Image 1: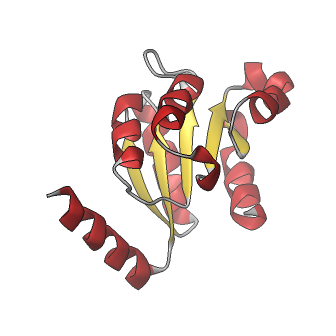
Image 2: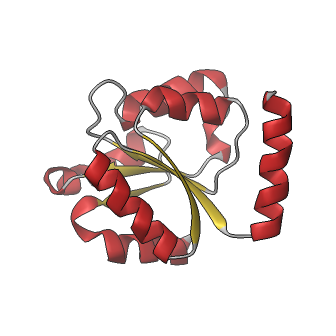
Length: 137
């Protein structure tokens, strides 16, 4: 039952008081590395390799302090994923961060201006970026 999961979710969140992050990336190696790095920074981490799974989790009221979505996923990249979420719920209450490769660093501001992302995380600089995000939100 989804309602039971949602209330269990809230209870565990209150007990742990760790920041909770959902990482969405279809590159397993990258997902594993990011997950370890967030855990090392005292985050509670949930991962998925599918944009559709992310949409289902968020629309079903699973709560996350941050949602990190890779922009280079095959079927549901970050823009498509956040657009699908936006059709169903108010994304302004979410803290959605787009994961960008080095080739997109020059257009990172475009993601913040044209889409409801609250921040970006540059792949080639994980450690510093995670610390920056942790300190700035």
